[in-house]
Every structure is written in structure tokens, then in C-alpha cells.
Length: 519
Image (cartoon, rainbow, N blue to C red; front, side, top):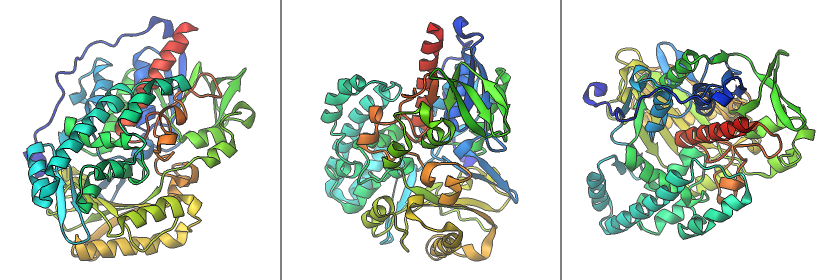
């Protein structure tokens, strides 16, 4: 199997040393609401620093969007499956004086992606840049020089947007003004697609080098070109997979948190954030239990945190009206399925792009229409890790971007019809014999995002990553309405995606340490 052929890419050069506790925070209490990557990371960081942390999760196990579904011997990662910048996960363990290898094993995925086009052609790329250039030259010979220039520009965006700005809070408009000249110089007012089109002329390669915003909830034709940094981010550290699935990272972080003395409360939805004299002082659960704290960190959906957990009189800026005016990401329709037949020709990450790519995305993001057409992300973790399925079987999920719940689509009726269209398409084009070899399956629809995952309008990634909803324009990591209330996750700065969410936890840690140390 492929896992025997892959070498682990470890980060053993990261220092493992005893954590530096902050004596001034020794008896300060923090409540973290939600245990996605943002909440788990914030909880680990704060517990490491000596805070007394309660992590409260509404579902029956940790993970939030990164929930692990298990059925009929198959394991399905419910959320993120593309791991970039793996050192950001490693440092959560090393910062606590632990060896990451004792908790999680991450391996590189090659190729990063295979992109399939409607005309039967495909393009794939990975860590070997010389090989990627060779493939660009073979696919569109006149685009090689433009591709090289695009990568150099993407590096400049990466250096500013990721290395410098992703871990910096934008709490004041002056913070935005200071970086405005750099954002203009890097042409962040352009979309990611316009960025790629400025260098690459082949229409299909333009799609290859601009699809990444879809991984963080954005339309490539609208998302700020700051997100072009993702391509260079992948080149810098590669694309990785955690053996046992993303759920193994959640399990490792949960184990670390409890070993450090943190407390986990499962099946405990939070009904209210308690506010006294303009400051968060704890939470009350749906069962009526109260957890008092010196600070509250919300990894729940930002819009619903304000709408459902903070009383209107305590949020004069983030009113229901303001939240309703903001633009939210698309939602997702996901089919998790297992087969008794294996498909060794399918890579770990396959992107299948529709012929009507631009029109499809316009209908999803702007018109809120569900078309007969679709683009898919086909995830096959068993290409790397046979433990995700019973012996001789394969494990998949097929994910299609769809409109969020503002569309008015009745998913109780549409879900089986849309599922049938997708599985029939896969059976005919990519997974022959799929329909007769299905062993198990489950669906996740925008209705599930709205209810089970409790996201406003059933959005898959909170706020759409537009320039006017980025950095200072995005809900801040420290609430503008309630003191000692902090946000982590996709809906705050710097945005969605595993690196962005992990960065938000680092920012929250810094802000809380500064705030509570000064009290």
C-alpha cells in the first residue's frame, strides 16, 4: 500500500522544551466554546500557559467541523482533509514540551491534486517544482514563463500575507491603514482568478492555479488575490495527511489538552454568554449549568455566537441587521461513501471542474441557484491510508459546492436527487461499478450545516473571503462589543482553512495573555 511507500515528513528540528508558564495567569479561568481546530488549539495554548481552561462542545465528541464519522468499518473525516503548514500543528505539542510524533503522524501526499477537466484531460502537480514546470510546458508551452512569474508574485503575497500578517490582530482601523500600501502593491483588490489570468493564458490552467479559494469558502472570481498565497504555501511545506484521518489530529490535541489538566465537556451546548458591565464573565449551557470565567473564547460560528449567545443589548455593533448584510460563503453537499471495490487509479485529492465553471460559481455564490451541473472535490484517503476502510475496500467523499440556505432550497427533497446525479456521474466517468459496489454512505447538506453544525444560513466557511470582509473588515479576534470575548475559527481573522484557523488561536492566546496579565 502507498503508506508503506511514503516517508514521514517530520519536523524533529522543532524545539521540544518545557512550556513557559505565565505566573500572572496561574489562576485565571477561560471557557472555550466549540472544539474545532480553532477551539482545540486555543484551549491547548492557554492551558499550556497556565490558564484553567474548560472546553465545552455541543456534539458527542471533539472536532467541530473536523468531526470523525465511523460506520460499517469505514472512517470519514467530516471536515478539512488538506493539511498544509503542518509545523503549525506540531508546535502545539512542542510548545507544551511534548513530542508530536507521540500523538500524530503526518505524511506527505503526492501529487497534491489531480485536476480533471470536462474534455477528458487532466493536470496534476506536487512538491517537485521542476516536474510541475515540465507539466505546465507540456500542457500549454507558451505559459511556462508566465507560470514562473506568477509563482514569484505568489511568494511575495505569501511573505506579506502569511508570514507577516496572518498572526497579527487587526483590532483598529489604523492597523489596516499601516498595511494598505502593501496590499495595494500586491494587487489584493484583484480576484484570485484575475491574478492567475494575468500570468497564464490557457483557460484550463487558469482554473488550476485559481481554484484554491473554493477550499476556504470563496469564489475564485471574487475572492481577494491575497489567497493566491495558498499555492506558494503548498510549495513551501507540501500537502500532508494525518494517518488515521484528520480525526487523529483532533484526538491527539484532545489527549494533550486533558494531559495538561484541561477539562472537556461533551454534549453540552452553550445557550448564553454571560455579560456583566460590558465584559464576558462565563457561559450558561442549555441545561442551565453556569461556567464562570475571566475570558470566553468562541469557536462557534461568529454570526450565530452574536445572534444566539449574546443578548442584543450587549452587541450594538454586531446587530442582526449588520450580520444579515454580510456575505456568507457557499455551503457544501457531501456524500461520504465506502465501496467493496478499490479504485487505485484515483488519487488522494481529485478536483473535477465543470465545463461551465464560471457560470456555475456565479449561480452558487450570487444567484443562489442549484444547477444540474456541478464541480466536485473527490477525496480518497485510502490512496494513502488503508486503515480508513475494511480490507479490500475504498473510502471516499464527494463534495460539491452549493448555495447556502438563503437559496430557499428544500434539501429534504433535493438531497436524494442531487446525490443520484453525482453518484451516476462518478459511476460513468471515474468510478466504474460504483453503484453496484456501494457498501455504506451518508450525506451532509446545507441543512445539516444550519442545524447540526449551527452555521448562519448554513454557510460552509462563515464569511465569504472578499477584500471588504478581510483583516480589519472581518469580525475581530477580540469582540468589538464585549470585553474579554474572543473569536477563533473561520469567521474571524485571518480566515478559513487549517492554517488560518490555527493562526486565529495563536492571536487569541496573545490577546488573552496581554489582557489578563495586565489585570
